[in-house]
Image 1 (cartoon, rainbow, N blue to C red):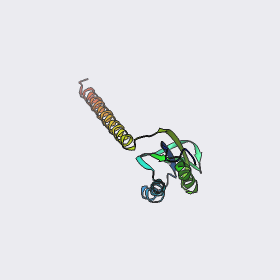
Image 2 (image 1 turned 135 degrees about the vertical axis):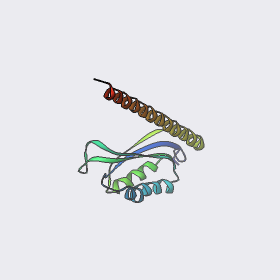
Image 3 (image 1 turned 90 degrees about the vertical axis):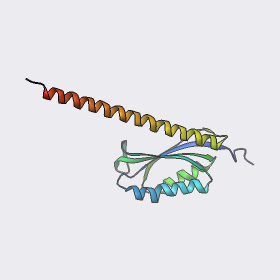
Image 4 (image 1 turned 180 degrees about the vertical axis):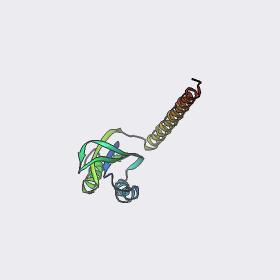
Amino acid sequence: MSTTIGKLREYETVFVVNPDLTDDVVNETIVDRLKGVLDKKKAELLREDRWGKRKMAFEAKKHARGNYILLHFVAEVGVVEELERTMRNLEHVSRFTTTRIGEVIDVEAKKAEVEKMVKERAAAKAKQEAERREQEAAAAAAASNVAEAPR
């Protein structure tokens, strides 16, 4: 009997999807199927993050851009193999990689930690956006003052 059965680990899987697909197709055919694999294997999805369409370092399946999606989850040993097998069989998934973050003892504590991190990132992003808007407004006001100055 293996000693790794029941051992929980934290993983992040990033995969790249064909950029020509609509969000509905990506959700219904790819993301939902991968979430189904995680559910079937009793993995706990901590977060799903859509990074959007980005330029890739090199072409994959004749595409220079890709739609990036991250799945952050806690699962038993062996779940990653099934998830990656499923991704290999999906024609619209160009690339994928899975990283093991570490061991997990308390799933609920890990969920709370991830939720806190997501909220902090959202607050920092909102703050950056507000600062950017303030700088743009100040630059516009300065440009307006220069344009109105008598010659």
